[in-house]
Length: 588
Ligand code: FES
Image (cartoon, rainbow, N blue to C red; front, side):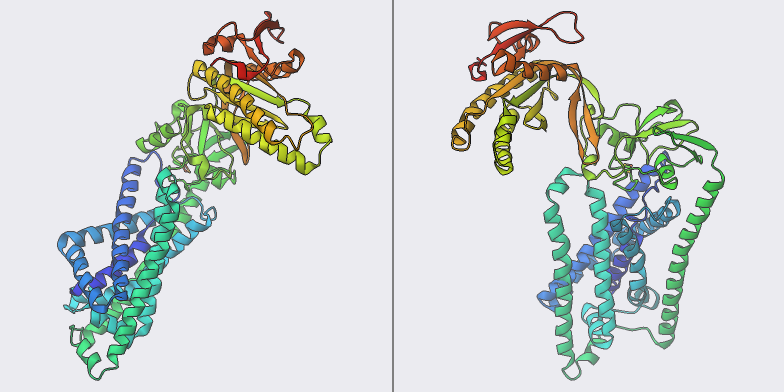
């Protein structure tokens, strides 16, 4: 049982200290053959250490039951972590984690770009060793070096009776370690859909576990302090373990001081090396990188596009902080694609997730070559939502889809006769009904323009199914309009009337917009034609006009409605259309 207590503390400390979770934003040198291994090493070592911290916290939580229960559970920890395999796993993880963290500090491009959670993680991680070095050396160190003993009760006695400041330090270290680990877990999982869905549960666990642990630790401490009031109990507790003698203690305190100084020097060394690396890069800029906006900057061989953007103060999205996970730093390569090193497996995985075409790369993973031209594809302040994977058409693609336009007849007159509140109320009721009809048929609401609606069908399918969906939507809209008019009868002088235009054909489909006003939309002749057909419903005195092309594509009976032809700008041939008086009459 001896080493467990100290081992727990040490691992806990080192977990926090070593984790590169905050420090390593752009640090896995992209294109580097080590990149994948470093990512795996960081994750594996972090998880081992987080498991260790968690078990330590759970052990403390048992103090809510009794000190003996804590000691009993502690035996289980010893069984895992004290034997050689557990020790190798634990200390191996600590070594790997610390090394990667220091490497991350060295390689980081700029610290001032860090966002608050990253700063918190870095500061917490660097603080923990200072909080627990003395505990680690005085427990496990003393066991290894001086054959000193320890057990849970005597250790609690030391921390809560003989030197209560140690209990306080231990508690602070636990909170810091847990918080650091939780931030790292969040950074790791933040782009997973299941994690986002279960975010509340994870947050609850993140709060409940340390709360229980601290409560248990304090309860155990109070129990120990009560026992210590009994005559002779403290002496009895002290005899439960062998302690270092005076000279050994002096040597041990010297070791603690040396370890603290050594650790501080190590961290300072990483920061100094980082500064030297930065000035080296600054002096050796010999490559030219051109942005789509026209800016031309100098770069050093080995730097990534994202590093250059940051160093040159060019706004560039990077939600995951340059870890190659989020895809928000993606750029389109305009020139120099053939000179780039091929994407690593890790980068390819992310690029496949977003269905990126071959000329799109992750800026954080792509090293600059001379004459490279790039255009960031997402706005600089894109959030995690932009990191979600999506189909290729989000980047722009020509698709054959069905387009629906709908408009309320004479709504200008209605709005002029009503109070603004009534207009908003009526419109929102109308949009809710029409939106439900469109989505119920499988369409995508593209936009509401005044009292008009634009919707797309078949974006994920084919023109035939999209055309059928569009017809189903038109019919459902008409049916819902009748019900809506009945329910609004008391609010309207006359029932709402709508015109709907449907056409199918090639469109440019993609995610377009600016800032927060961004979404999937379509542009092109098909869209204009659908809009024109909707406008014609007024002249033709019908509710629905469908292009003959859509009739054919959908398999609708050719004799549906009344056929006619219209002139369309840019076409030499007139366009055949079908006019349907009431969309509810559609035989679909
Ligand atoms: S910054 Fe997240 S993938 Fe590049």
